[in-house]
Each structure stands twice: as C-alpha cells, then as structure tokens.
Image (cartoon, rainbow, N blue to C red; front, side, top):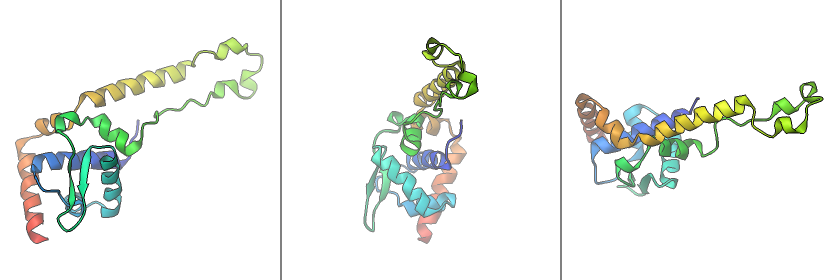
Length: 162
C-alpha cells in the first residue's frame, strides 16, 4: 500500500510540534525550512490537517500551526485520512463479471465478493487498525533523545536566523 509523501510530511510536522513544545504557533515556512520542503505543498498538507481538526492555524505575523489536541489523541490513521482522504485503497471493479470470462456464469456466482477483493479488504483493515493503534505521542516517545535534542537545536538556530 502506497501513500503520498504528504502523509510522511504531516506526521513529521506533528512530531516536530510535539518536540518543540511551543505554546505559540509555529510558522509553516519554518516547518518547511526544517525539512527543505516546498512551502506551497506543505501548506496544502497542513491545511488538510487543520480541516481534519488535528492542527489549529493562526494567520498574521505571529501566525502558524500547533497541535489542536493532545498528541495521545492523534493517531497515525488520523493523519493518513486527513491527507489521503477516507476512501478505501482498493476499489474492486468486478472485472470478473466482464467480457468472455463471465459468459455462462450463474448470477449467484457474483453475490459474494471475489477472493481478491476479500483479501485486499482484510489487508487494508489490518493496516488501518495498526495505524489507528499508534499515536503521535507513541511516535514521539519512541524517538531517541538525541533526535529530540537535534530537532530543538536546529529549530532554535533556524528561528534566530529569520
């Protein structure tokens, strides 16, 4: 299963916000600079996270984003859904009912999903359950202390130059 880079960007921005512990909003331009990302594209990702209620956004010279709720209440699946949307990853087109392959089939043959659709659905549900069970707080807690220190130091250095 493949997700867009926006999911990774969104998760890393959420983690960075946790580690910074800022009470003031963090400018999206600084987040983009932290990862050398396109500010325009990152803003689109941050807007999706804001619309989903994962971030709050403030405009103006002291504006930026911050987490909208406790990191223990933001799951990885929340971020995936905010960025990618809620649609299933696999959409069965029922090609088994098309063309010469379907000729002579009894209608009852197609009343249940085919084995492919059923297997893909089970795999997706397992994937979604796993992501729903891991929070941003879990990710932040599992990170090495050196990572947190490095992010804070580099953010402070970036803040002093802007």
